[in-house]
Image (spheres, rainbow, N blue to C red):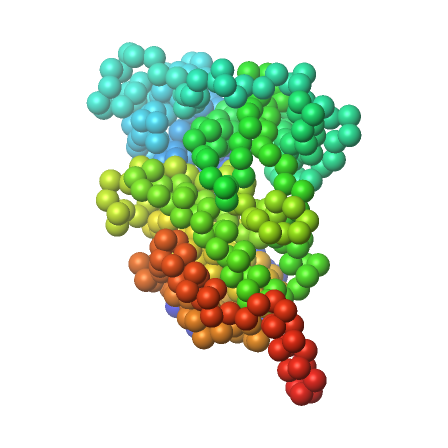
Length: 440
């Protein structure tokens, strides 16, 4: 962010013209934009972006894939020539050590293969055989245990419970049990990047077993449409629950927070750390209508990282996740680590105690920008004891290294829980307060 943006941040939401907002958002999203235009054969748009900022030729997504990887895979010659003209590294390697040429060969894009070879492109990585054929999508683990025959899925009484840009989530039946089915849109079933993300999510979920993580049951990976099947939780999501209930008592909020923190502590366990990257009330599910147990779900944006050093940080895609709960370092496209999830947790804890989403008077993008400029939501609720306020402030600290781990959060929440009044006593307290407080 530039200095001029930072100084006017708190009034930006109210004063900025729609055009200014649009320009600011486009600036922050440049990495996403160039990858998007490379994907859609937008040579003139790619050229314009590179003329404005030549460094974008080295842009990478969270899998270290460059615009040249994307163009090579689809065979977009003009886009590739433009990128090479601006100094693209023809032998950059993605997370699976594939070069752009390996992608072009995998997709049988013969003209692209010739173009890349003419510029010194190698078929694989510098450490591997240049002639050894490499599968482009990451391999799936042995499927015999969890591959589901689509004929076993019963959609006769199905209901759509969620929609996204890649597909929909449907309540269906499987062997007599209600399940949640994430179904990829048929129009995207041949899109390599979508398939890659789908396989990544399956790879991740197969390994997860925890009482506070939504349970993976199986997937349909060798027929279309691709489907991912998890347990169905009858209580709905925390977003809907809070919409109906408003502010929770401190005892209930802490009980919910403990469940979320237990699931997240499991995901963050080293050396195989899973960064959720989209922790928000919609992705926290209630087991039943009495809301006595919560689980963390939706790992579509999660990334499995092998930690070599506990202080490792990662260059991952900026603006991954939901703006209202987004850590400032993500919004600003800076290096970040698993502490982004701790920041999102603080925002959820705030929402549970306040009854309203953080910075609800701002649009989501403006809220993220406001937070990235150093501001935080105001504490208003009676439920904020000193200890809860202190914990929230630590969790949303601007310096990610100062945010506690989820194991530390669990210890602090357990101590706080011991000091809180029961829901019954809390209701008596709040009703007596409202009688004496004319503003309540």
